[in-house]
Amino acid sequence: MGDTVLTPRIIEFIKQEQPDYIVAPTGIAQFDIGSPLLLPKKDIKKLIEISTGSIIANHMDALDHCRLSRRELKELLGKEASKRFIIPEDGETIKLN
Image (cartoon, rainbow, N blue to C red; front, top):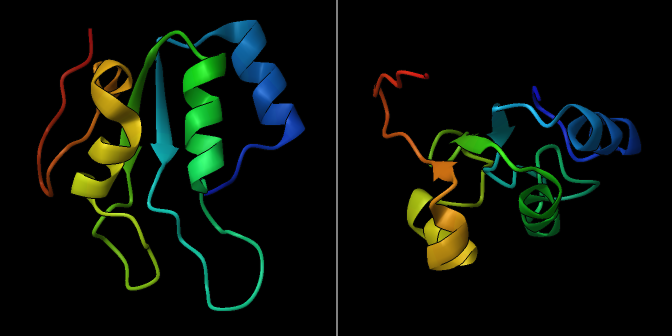
């Protein structure tokens, strides 16, 4: 997805193409004033609703303006949704099928 929020164009692409994997910026980055720079909580939940593939989360615990930790993301997702999320640790390598 790149560093973005869910725009109508991205939503439409995901619904039509249903990629096997989506790399999603889930760190909830936002400066003190203005719109979110990365997916806010409502967009993370919407991503779960519109996609059927696995979601690789990035940008948690990474930048001074990212407000969501890996632990908080797991809590937000709950047990069922977290099964579709891959939440790598810093430096971890992920092998995709």
